[in-house]
Image (cartoon, rainbow, N blue to C red; front, side, top):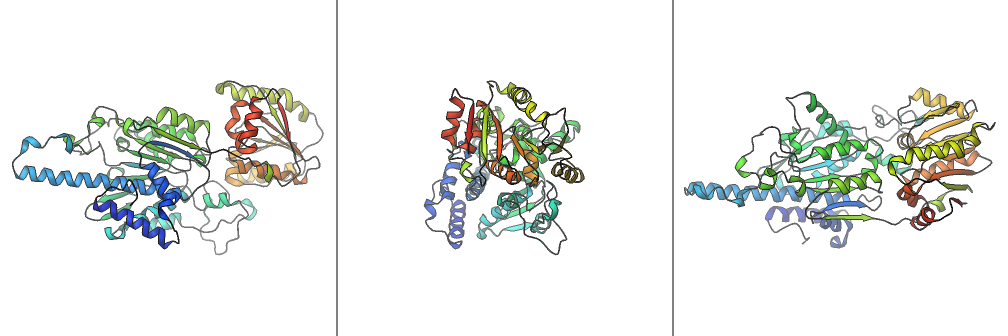
Length: 509
């Protein structure tokens, strides 16, 4: 028996169903599997920051934790209602208000799962349904609608025309071509983006209703942007509110690295709205509300599980400042060997460190170094073909073309042609544009990595675009504040040396 499932009949069924699914899928030694270990970690109810690379197996762990939490909550409420009914029957009114009967929050939703893309949401919802025991007579409403809107078809990347962030799902296509995109792109962008919310009724059987009302939901699956839109609506429409966020006890943020490629401020906005005392009463029995809710201490009892393939400062900041669980917190990160050995070409990679000590000044320091030390060398050069890989936008007083995540398709095609034919000397290519499109830029003769990419795979993909260059060299800018990004590229050992050494120039071949 896995630790954490308790001894009541419902949670035992949940555990047995999971074990049966694991065995039927060809697994062996369930109790030593990563899924069960991750479940046990979640079941400690500590805040968790898990950044150990791509690992799809842990999804089962947090889904089972969410289901187990709901089942245990339902079991407690059901038992208390039976006790209260018996006390009323025996006219023992004086015993009805005991602390043992405090088992409610302000509103019904207890679990919030934040996901960046509909493709991921679809996998989570399908797996959540699969992991719900069949003995509970599972009924699913609106699954056809979900399958229709999220249904998978192969991504057609003919001429890169269907690589837009909100247009990765190709509908009505009778023929599909095998995508040339990397595997992580195909996994993430099988579907178009969409907010999904669903509920999980607890009666004598499980009734799952997708696209349900927030206040009748037990589990909410949503994108950060979707929740933020609801928050914004409530700010100017007084008849609306987001009180359904007041009683979230388990917050799960999966694929935080993908969310960081969208807009991380949305995550901060959602977390800041959690566990506030609601503006209205929503039909809850006030006499059953737990004391910590009434005292405004619900945040201290909320578990936050943040999952990412890598760690960045935004995630660190959220975990350090907004995760206040009284049970404590666990942070799991990995050491990196780096990706330099995987560079296919014999490229001379020159890393130049600039001084920057304050995070608030880092962008200005980087731009100042670039303007004084790097840009003058390419500004007056007759040679074109300079691509500058950047994380965010900035301006140049020079002839350049831009490939950003919001650049129109017609402008993208024109810019690529201009750059390849030498009509524009400089191209600015953003990391987010590469995340959404994965273009292969031709005509690069000089590569400058203005800021290291968050995703280590992007470094390889961009460096390998130099295959048409005669020089086969690139310049990489970094500071000591880029430690987290740097170690994913050059390895943890090299990164420590490069950020602590008195030298400021480092060369890899």
